[in-house]
Image 1 (tube, rainbow, N blue to C red):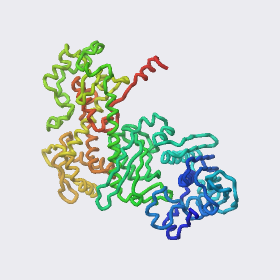
Image 2: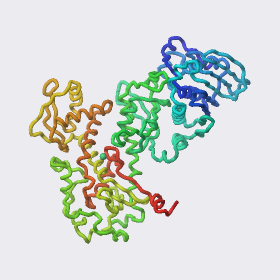
Image 3: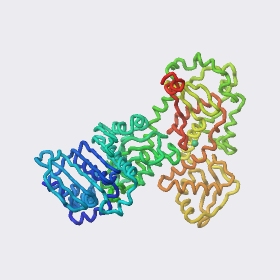
Image 4: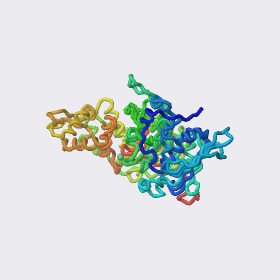
Length: 623
Ligand SMILES: [Zn+2]
């Protein structure tokens, strides 16, 4: 029985008849997807001159008999769809009834195929859509398609192609997508007679990523929490399985090229997913940077429409908010899951055993006493001053790291020259032992671990701590507010007024006392206590401008985070604020307790490590 059916006209009309073949990369995409559907274990792709002059895809899949081979070249033929209802639940890569005939109509096309048990194969040659030759051929089992002189009969289309290099890169990217989506299939890519890569069949995604990008890349990725999420939308609860690998906090690219998302095995581009990634990585990446993600979503096929784009690059979700929330949540959980191994980097070398805690470590006693200069006489209120007049202490909102130590602590610090030479390894709340060496340039905390030297940016660390502290307060009971002496009213253009009205409750939670005072007029009578502004109206204007643009598709709580991140910088320990030892120790402990300790809320790293190996190399001890 023929596996490939002719689509009834009604179904055919539902198939977007748009342009499937845009460029050589789309030819490669369609041919490779056909090979995958045919159960190939091995796919070889060869291109010449950007794929414009030649593309060949060979697979070891099931192959076709003569009838199926001919049918596959008829318009609207497909092996996937037998009725309109099948369109509803396309769980495979989809249907490409248009693909082969479309390609054959704009190229010099040759298809050779043979089923595994068949005595003879079939060869079909088509030029510009016209079948020239159909004959028996003695090919190996599987299917081989050659596409020459793409768009030779459509010079106008050919003019839209980019340089051969650019087209080649697009093809390579396309093969990366397919190879990452199907690690179990072996891929070979040859460009202009040069082998670009040869990927053996891999057991899992990790192996495929290592083969494709190297083990260094793999080390920078975290496995995504494989949990399934049920969207709490009772009447149409939907199950989403999320898996794959994503970059650790701070691992980023200037472009979206390594931000890959797959829905039901298909590489797709989706504004919903892009926004979810941006939101999931909020405060974990620097502005303008893109995350590195190999994210796989499995979702009920009826909950996603793959036919938005003729080449099926885009999808439409039935419940975009549910998908977005599930992705954001799993990204956050995954990023937080990297914390344990990260924390371990702060551990003192094993030589400083727990028994040694509090005991002098010989070589450290040689340390000059003034390792924390200028700290001795400086009162901790100096930190409060950095926070500003209406700082935390004024409203009892003292972040953990600026809690003033009691008098004993001060004495135990470098105030007392005798005790200043105490060893400064100590035990954290989670019984983790640090080895703090000192502070460089009043900014970098130097620590020793088993691998070498750890540097912590105290400003970035403090920003992160403040940020999470304030966010916690916002989520729990709202940010403490500070009443204005004189409430102020201001007018806004209708669209901004509309935005305020929609986000009124979240603004209030953020500590902004705002209410309507006329059609497009608002009254503001209090501001977040941690804020230090003399012009509330100007501040509101900035909040609206900043948040309106960044919030188009993110959750309202993210607005608050954004605002805190924008303001927290000014209140964190300044780069040149000297800290006492106990404060530094507290800072490290508080940092380690953060959800995303790896970077400040603006995405700058809080810690870097310089390994013994790097030092040895620099000192010429090792080459
Ligand atoms: Zn920052």
